[in-house]
Amino acid sequence: TPPELIRNFCIIAHIDHGKSTLADRMLQLTGVVQPRDARAQYLDRMDIERERGITIKSQAVRMPWQRGEEPYALNMIDTPGHVDFTYEVSRSLAACEGAILLVDAAQGIEAQTLANLYLAMEHDLEIIPVLNKIDLPAAQPEKYAAELAGLVGGEPEDVLRVSGKTGDGVTELLDLIVDRVPAPVGDPDAPARAMIFDSVYDTYRGVVTYVRAVDGDLNPRERIEMMSTKATHELLEIGVISPEPIKTKGLGVGEVGYLITGVKDVRQSKVGDTVTSAQHPAAEPLGGYDDPKPMVFSGLYPIDGSDYPTLRDALDKLKLNDAALNYEPETSVALGFGFRVGFLGLLHLEIVRERLEREFDLDLISTAPNVVYDVTMEDGTTVKVTNPSEFPAGRIKEVREPIVKATVLAPSEFVGAVMGLCTDRRGQMEGMDYLSEDRVELRWTLPLAEIVFDFFDALKSRTRGYASLDYEPSGDQAADLVKVDILLQGDQVDAFSAIVHKDAAYEYGVKMTAKLKEIIPRQQFEVPIQAAVGARIIARETVRAIRKDVLAKCYGGDISRKRKLLEKQKEGKKRMKNIGSVEVPKEAFISALSSD
Ligand code: GTP
Image 1 (cartoon, rainbow, N blue to C red):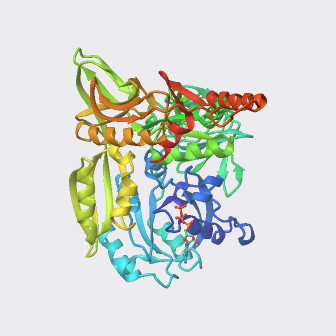
Image 2: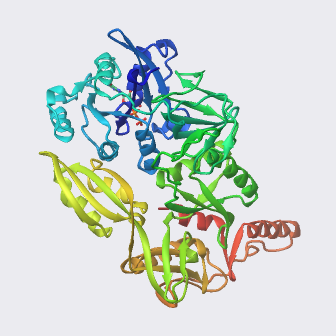
Image 3: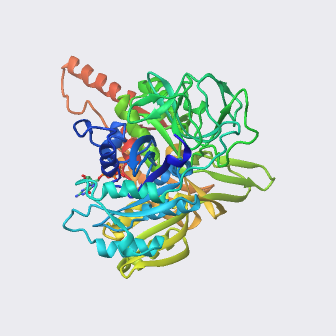
């Protein structure tokens, strides 16, 4: 297809505003899927995605569309909606010339819509504002059309109104995409360059790489080169998805499709990288390549220690499909053998954990998530801390922590509540705008560590569920942070160490010691539970001594019964963890770690 007849676009929408339903409707109207095999949410592949209603992996579908005399090819590129995947979102956007800004006509704009809109604007995409779900009785198209027009420019009456469910307005939308989205431009005679915007592991075919061709022509008979690593691969297959893979004779300027090279690990085919011809390589890669950086770390441990090898194999398998997943073995006094795992964010953590538990049948416990700290010592050495228990002792000059730019959208009555929460969480206000009389956008800079720690729940409860939040990484800052250790009879319990702001250390210490006091069984001696910053004890509780005599109830001679009870006690002991001389059931640690 010549570039003049190609339109590359994506749909930007908040969760549940109807992106998948609209995408399905477009696939039907363009004849790509017949109504009877229009499975619910065609674009979302994995079960987890469907159940949670979120899209993790982006994909592209090519749809034919006749406008006047001309047969157009519309490439719909699916963007992940969630903040954890900002980098993947930005690569999908870079593959498009236009974006449909889809807003639920009964809900209005949400924070996620805004954050993705700003990204789309940074990529200079043509924005087409569209109100969805106009069939809903609760729809307020007039009100939200004005909001949308105010945001992206233009007149409220020009905001298209559609229903993905009934199909109303969707034909007009397809025409509007042809008319408004610019055709792709590129140099057909230059050496081939294509940008990878997604890379998915398939059990049967190995890695399937999704690309947007920019210059030249990718030819199925040539070897290709990944420009970031200079690795070359044989091209086994090249094609477009519509909605099943269809082989083609190549991909020319502006086209969107897939490549299969036989590699088995998505790390060999990285999102953002440039594909070129190995024989006639381009001089310069396309811009924007970045390695995925884990932002949040957590220890993952099997509840049953004998599952450790299964967990290791499961992580190795998941890694084939998730270039951002990053892990190394770790041992904890309290939890045994496990892994320290790096994630893009909290949702990524949840998804990985859920897949491990569901697909590999593992029961896991994870330690409280923490961010990465850069610690500079007075002697000039620097340490990257991904595990709080490894925070260096000694003379520290500076600790830096990652910060994020957060966007909160809330009804105006909650402005005070949101500002209070952000202030409590060491935030810095950057700006505030009224989107309409009753809805406000607040922009704050916040430490990522504060967001990782139940920020979203606190925001929801202070705004009765009405606020929405989005954030993106924004560098780091120096902060007054200390490590709080929890000690049982003087021995550190590694899984409970935390890095917190100096002013919050006392509160953390009091809370953790009180919690552990409740769950640690009495021993035959008194057990002090202490919280300490360095050598300084900041909180203390005591578990009183008790002598637990299992034989107390057996008077007299029944020797076999006695033996049984003693055996049983021994069994119980196997499940105990020794912290110094204190015996604690692993379950106690697990319940302490999972209760918030
Ligand atoms: P994510 O994948 O979570 O981002 O969701 P989504 O934006 O893809 O939303 P989805 O298409 O799954 O729709 C969310 C809900 O809204 C579903 O219950 C749909 O049935 C419903 N819905 C979608 N479009 C319409 C519409 O035009 N009218 C009505 N009444 N309901 C709709």
